[in-house]
Length: 55
Image 1 (cartoon, rainbow, N blue to C red):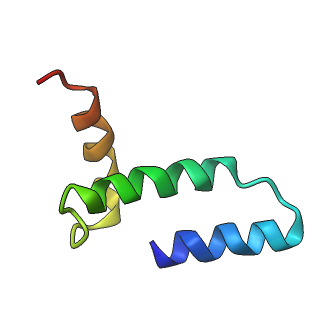
Image 2 (image 1 turned 90 degrees about the vertical axis):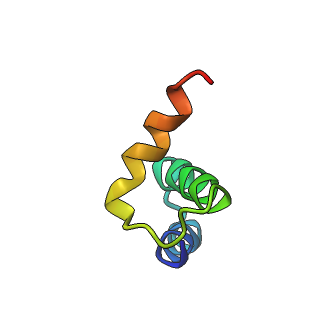
């Protein structure tokens, strides 16, 4: 999270659009909310896949 937040902050300071990074931040925050904060970032696709499944 910290690295993504820093990238977005740096982009904003430089006037660079950071749409993809902002979307990644939302997905990561959703994962943290689900209790996945300690998982490796490479498992981000599982957060997205889980979001597409119907309960």
